[in-house]
Length: 313
Image (cartoon, rainbow, N blue to C red; front, side, top):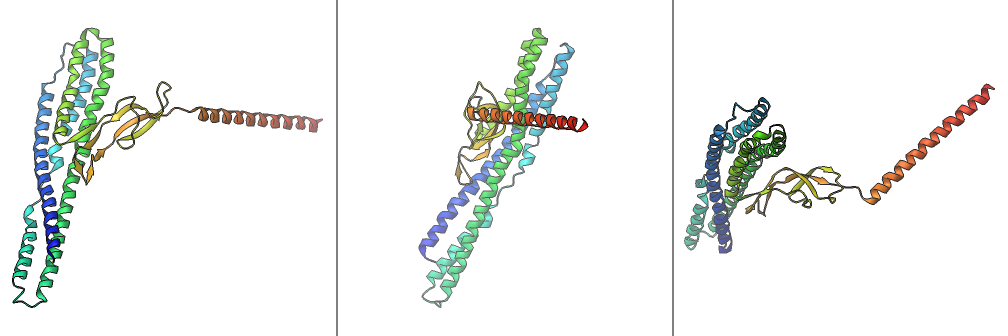
């Protein structure tokens, strides 16, 4: 094995082993952060109360919201268990160094050894080193997959529940302010729990270089970051403008799976699709053709009736 190959293996080994060790540290820290987040959620949930002296209709409405918050807190309590992180053991890669030593030993003894021994040792070293690089790459991919899957499948549902609760809370706030204006301030303060928990969750995402994809109404649709789940007509907006954000998306701010700004999951949105003048003209023509066809049917029926009358005569 020539020196260039040895140097190449050494560079690859340092690169991939360094990344594996870094993800070991990141996922271990994420596991601890998830546990802390769960405890914070539980603490803030226990601080929530509903004034029993409020009108019965308002108490019932807030109790329904409280049940939704409880479910989000319960989902958050399982985060660490869902991550279930176990670090990759770096000791299994020690063979890389041993094979380099084997090469060096063979080269040192080349003068006193049979010429056939060195190529044999070099071939074994090459295969072993190649195997270790492939193991490192596979372990790196598994760690990155664990991270992205945890964000998408575990953090995502907690975020979705809180976002939906906050969104529906806006409607509830307006409804309760109309029905119980004297308690409007209380309801507004009570519903801030959604924003508080969302900020806690977003803080964890920011800590681990995960950004939110949160397009707002009126932005133009972007197929890279966004997934359309419905199209709606709205003459007050342009075609392909975003009508509503349905679900947050996530992206990684660094490099994941050898890709810069990796989209962990796209944002889900509804998109405006208005009829163009040509489409409206096509619909009009189609309607006219249907009307003509219906008129022809009527004429045929009329003629048949007339023929029938003649036969009777």
